Image 1: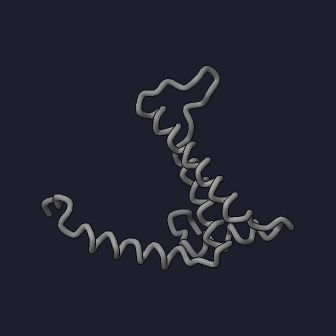
Image 2: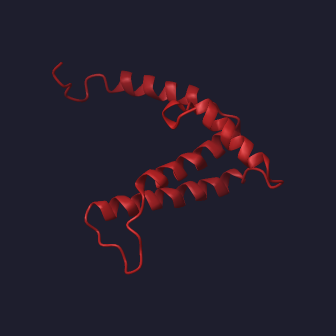
Length: 110
């Protein structure tokens, strides 16, 4: 399966198989929330560097794709640990924004 064909379900299974190798299992929810916050900070750091902030001496500018993937990994861990279906949640979220924001933005001409 190519990365372009990866589904939420398959990503969830891959993460679960990875975590199942370790007796510690998934981190508790509050620790995963802390990890989400840390990964979001890394995303912010990379975007700041891309937007003109000069990295500290010896600090890499960063890799936004990897940082977003790290954030996604932790979100999938949290969803798995809580028994949530991200595909269903994503579908519900898209329906919500499509209904709520129907007339909010200027549509492009076809």
